[in-house]
Amino acid sequence: MSRFVQIHLLTSYPPANLNRDDQGRPKTAKMGGFDRLRVSSQSLKRAWRTSDLFQQALSEHVGTRTKLLGVTAYDKLVAGGVKEKQAKEWAQKIAGVFGALKKAKEKEPLVDLEIEQLVHVSPSEMRGIDDLIATLISQNRAPEEAELGLLRKQGQSADIALFGRMLASSPAYNVDAACQVAHAISVHPVVIEDDYFTAVDDLNDGSEDAGAAHIGETGFAAGLFYSYICINRELLVDNLGGDEALAQKAIKALTEAAVKVSPEGKQNSFGSRAYASYALAEKGDQQPRSLSVAFLKPITSQGIEGDDFGTAAVAALTTQRNNMDAVYGPCADTCCELNVFQGKGTLPELLKFVAE
Image (tube, rainbow, N blue to C red; front, side):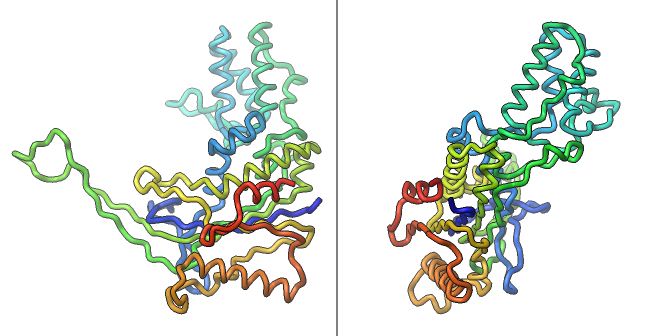
């Protein structure tokens, strides 16, 4: 079994604002002395993890990230006939297993049921909470200390096994991420542009006021992005309690989501859905390495000689990979690729390769 699976993607997006900064503009990074578009790894992972594709492929093996375990427990207890004061006390004990709770505020009576930090909870842990709540309702009593062992170390959900979990109050139940995801970055320089737009009131006939009902401005840019994913297959299997079949399903589902699923930012405004135009998957026990250095010198229209940015980016990626192999020796044992620019390779072949 190859220890590492590495996936390199080139995905082209039309004008879009996939991942915004604190000013509402597309995120950027400076690389090789030039401004590039950027999509954060957090944005990518959330888009993949919450996608219909990922959810359907792994169904009951996908967890939930939330601060609201105490609130939902309280609501279920009250709905089951428990008095509000008791329900709150019991819900606080249940939620407190997963992390420190927020301090109460005068105008927010249930805020002290919320966990201070987001916690990723597996399906088995959610079932444990529901079973305990049902018991408390039927027996009309507070939870006992022995019943509050709700956390699980093995048999985690696939997304927790892939992306990890950190519980500051219960470090014994932390999970090291088996998957590393780089920030996607454009292979060429970019300039963020501004879209000035107006909205018209449909009931305004213009007889008194011919102006717009709303005026706004939003930033956007188009880019061809390089993305990199590295999966430690051995750690993934260990995180899943030795379930090799589930590990294969998780790798396959993640790869397909990475190839097909776009970040959700401003999709209704730009419709910037895209599949990867190029994908290279590698397997082996060698130390992983990104190929982002292929774009340290940005792809530009100069020197392309009739080829588009996509074809030039594939060529740069291939040259960098071959050069690394020449210097360091083979950096992977086997590989599989698909190239939409040339109509070569297929997605089923790629998914079979990464999952085996």
